[in-house]
Amino acid sequence: MNLESLLTDRLARSFAAVAGGPVDPVVRRSRHADFQAEAALSLARRLGRAPREIAAEVVERAALADLCSSVAVSGPGFVNLTVAEDLLGTLLSRMAADPRLGVPTATTPETVVVDYSAPNVAKEMHVGHLRSTVIGDATARLLEWLGHRVVRANHLGDWGTPFGMLIEHLADLGESTAAEELSIGDLDSFYKGARAKFDADQAFRRRARERVVALQGGDESTLRLWRLLVAESESYFLAVYDRLDVLLTRADFVGESHYNPMLGPVTDELDQLGLLVESGDAACAFPPGFPGRDGEPVPLIVRKRDGGYGYAATDLAALRYRTRELGATRLLYVVGVPQRQHFEMVYAVARQAGWLRPPTRAEHVGFGLVLGPDGRKLASRAGDSVKLVDLLDEAVARAAALARQKNPNLETAAAAELGRAIGIGAVKYADLSADRTRDYVFDWDRMLALSGNTAPYLQYAHARIRSIFRRAGRTAPQDGVPMNLFQPPLAVRRRARSDAVCERRAVQVEKGSISIVEPAERALALELLDFGAVVGAVERTLEFHRLAGHLYAVAVAFSGFFEQCPVLRAEPAVRESRLVLCDLTARVLRQGLHLLGIAAPERM
Image 1 (cartoon, rainbow, N blue to C red):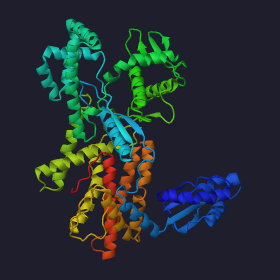
Image 2: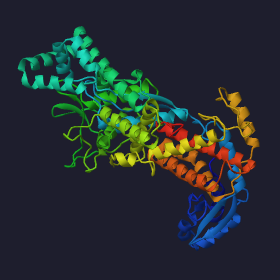
Image 3: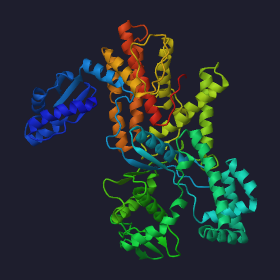
Image 4: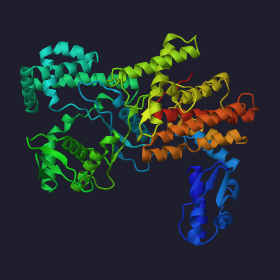
C-alpha cells in the first residue's frame, strides 16, 4: 500500500466517525506539507458546521502518530500531513529490497488483447502509424509486467479489392523482380506503380478485377502471389519495428484475411438475432445512441448488396473471435480519435449480440495527430506523409551528432549506439509524454533537449547515477536486483538469477537503515514511493503521460538531491543510505523507461 492509500485509509475512519457515514478524505500531494486532506470543505454544508471545526475534530480522532510527524489544520479547513521520517525510511527500504519496486502483480490476471500498429500490405509505414505503434507497445509492456496475459494483435490490412491490382502488378513484373523491389522496402513505389497502371490501362484494370474474384475464390496461383506480397511487406514492417524497438513479431500479424471465413457466420448470427436491417444497398445494424446530424440513427454497414462486407463486419468478427476463442476479458483498440464512433458502434452491436458481457469490456484507446511546427498534420516539404523510417533515421542521426558534440572522443560505434538509444527514445517519449487524446507538435529541438521533460533528460539522470557507482568502485545492480548494503565496495555483484537469491538480498537490505533527514532526501523519497500508485493508475487509464510525468518528477527530485546531498563524500553510514537511494532511483527510472519502450543507457 502506498503512502497516499495509507493516509486515506486512516483518515477515512475519522471522517466517517465525524460525518456519520463513509467519506472520501480526498488526500492529495501538497506544496504546504507532504499531503493534504480536503474533505472537510465539502462536508461543511452537509453537516452545517464550519470546515475548520470539522477538520479539527477529524485530526483529534485520527490515529496517525505512527504515520505522521505533524498533522495540522490550515486555511479554510485543510488537514496538512507531514510523513514521519522513520516511516519514509522503512517504506523505502522495503521498496529497495523488492525486485518489483513495491509494484505487485495483478491479483486476478486477465487475458488482454491489444490491437495496434495495423499497417497496410504494400504500403510503407508513415508518421501516422507512430502513435498507435508506440502507445500500443507501451500498453503491452505495462500490462505484461503487471502479470496479465497479453495478446498483441497487429491487424494487418491484407485483404480487399486493392489486392487485385497489386497482385496483377506483381505478376506483370515477375516474382523475382517484384520480390527484390519489395525487399528493399520501397513499398510506396510498388503501390504507386500498380495504381498508375490501374488508372491508365483498361486491360490491366480488367485483369485486376478478375484477380479479385480469383483471390476471393481461393485460386491457388493467385493466393501464392498474395502470400509473397504479404510476406515481403511483413519483413519490411518487422525491420521498422526493430528500428523503433517495439516488441511486435511476425507471430503477432493477424490480418483482415484471418477473419474472412468468419464474416458469413457473424453476419448470419446478427441476422438471426434481429440486429440487421436492410437499408438502401446494405444490411446494417443500428445500435441505439448514435444519431446523425438529421437525428436519424447512424447505420453500421455490415454487408453490402453485392455480397461484399464492410469494415464493421471484420471488426465484429475479430471481436467475437477474441472473446470466444482467445478468452479475452479486456479488448484494447489503439486507434486514432476520429475512429471513436465507429468502434463504439461496433462495441454496442457486440453487446447486443451477447459477445461483450461483463466482466469482458472493449476500450477505444484513442489518440490525436502528430503536427508540424505550422500546426498542421506533419508532412514532408513536398506535402506527402513523412515516412516513419526516414523520421527514425533522422532522429538517430541528430542524437548521434549531439552525442559526438558533447563527447568528441566518443568512438563511432559507441556514438551510433548512443544515438539510437537517445534518438528513438526522444521520439517515443515526445509521443507518450503528451496527453494521447490530444494532438501534439513534433519539435526536434525540444524532444532532444537535455533539459525539461524529455527522454534525454531522464536518460541522463539514469546515466549520472550509474557514474556515481563507477566512481565509488562499485557495479550497481541492474534489472530490478536490489542493492546489497553490505557488499564490499570493490566487489563485483552478479545479477540475481533466482527468487532465493533475491530473497537473501532482500533480507540484507531490510537490516540496513535508509535515513531521510535532509529536505532534498524527503522530496526524492516521496516521489519514489509514488511509483506503484502511478503504475496502478496507468494500468486503468492507459494515460502514459502520467507515468512520463512521474519519471520526470523523480529525475527533477534526484537532481535536487544530487546537488544538495553529497553521496561519496558523506560519512560511511550516510553514504551507504544515499547509495541505496541512488540505486533505487536508477531502478525506478530504468523500469519506468522500459515500460515506455525506452532504453536507459549506462553512459551519456
